[in-house]
Image (cartoon, rainbow, N blue to C red; front, side, top):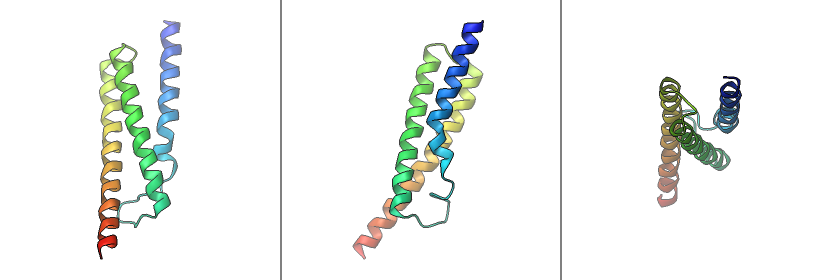
Amino acid sequence: MALFLVELALLIATLLFIAYPLYKRDSAAVAGQALTESDYSDLLYRKEAAYTALIDLEFDYKTGKIDDNDYKTMKTGMESEAIDLLKRADEFEKERSVRTVS
């Protein structure tokens, strides 16, 4: 039982470490706000971190380190964040292509 708690604590610490960049800069990519190139770069980094966290979560679930309820809760939150970041990145790319063509 103690080993399980240690493993769970390590898992949570790892997920928090990976997910930290997702919440680090609130100013980057706020809905309705124009992004700068540095914000876009930060957004791409956060998107990759979200994908990595999802892959790690899936691995931990398949190896039995996370139960079904925790997995579903964590996956839902991580997926919605990744989708939001992807939408913001796509919007910036569309705006940049329109500016380039004009």
